[in-house]
Length: 399
Image (cartoon, rainbow, N blue to C red; front, side, top):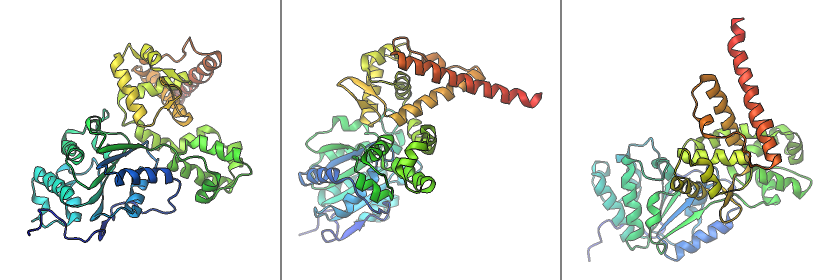
């Protein structure tokens, strides 16, 4: 009997090609997520997306799963995606790792490459991780034109019956998944690590005298492993690992500066409506319903765009849901969006080119007194303070 086309010659579990995945050290804290993913795979789910904001550990979780999943596979593969890649060549490393008997995979037309991978998924039991999918998406969740073939690959992976599993990691889901069959596709939304003093002390080499300090540290970072790592590095270097000293002496602004580059990176990939929503939530500084957001933004956006923007931010774990329809920001994102608003406002006043100041009320009349006090005494006064600094910096050299 002839061997089916594109069947791998490897014995079960003998081909593990994870050399393109990051090296893991001391991976802990994600037992519930690992258990959930394992159950889905054993139940026959063919396509899984792991989504969450930057720094949550999506890649680390997928990599750990690939190394330790007890389910038998003919092969386990990891392929990082990048917008800098030539789209025509981005699947070539996977084809080469699959080691299918094909003449010069790099010379194949793209449709033939897709067909080859699809048949390999159907004729073998494979685990394939496609990492960093957001690099191929536009701000609205659609694939950039040159990466449209990934739309086809994802759809075929979910719709064609097979025993393989493809895992996507991304900051946002592609729009195509909204139409996929829930019997073959599941999504794991990755949120922050749960507060665990023993875990934080051991993993990050920190110390604190009571549980309140650990809880405060967790709240500051929202349980984001990458944020925690940056904060822990500062605590070890500046405060000899003492969390209580850090909390007593470190201003929130200094903390924001440490991780601003990480938040910048994600903020700049958001659609304009999503950025506007974050800024409005930062000005409001309390949970706001969708109807109130529509009222504030309807001058620039229609209601459907606003609702779609809220859904998109919610799917990216950038919102805290307080009731079914009320949303707020985590404190770090609130501080970031406030800083962005202040700096943009100052820049526009200097250049006399207005956009931010045309779209946002810096003081909301209907706000609680304490919040209105913050809007006037911090946001507005900070804009004026920085504006004076800029004006003085411009004129002093000429005096």
